[in-house]
Image 1 (tube, one colour):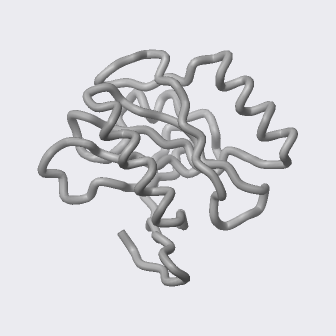
Image 2: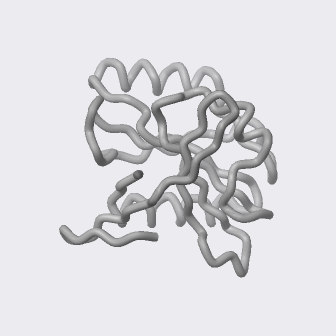
Length: 142
């Protein structure tokens, strides 16, 4: 299960809407072993694509080094889907490289009912997980 703070999810949704029609991406970081990520780190989509995202390699290296220095881990890899629902594409599955991370997908497509969904992706296997949004000390499922 992925638990995230409501204001973090809203930040990601707003940034994704602002990047539309291009996919938006980034990571949520937190202390190793933590249950809830503590910060959102927006990153460049080097692919500059409407249907694919790729972290810019130098930026990813810098961010991962920063995480190491702060004793943090990339708890969540997130990106937007601009023309489809919030489910992993074949490419998303193929490029998933963080076996311990949650993969959060936010859809900016008009009319989608579930705009944010979370998955675990490892060795080509995809498992959807519950997404708990924390707001003012209360938790609710999305």
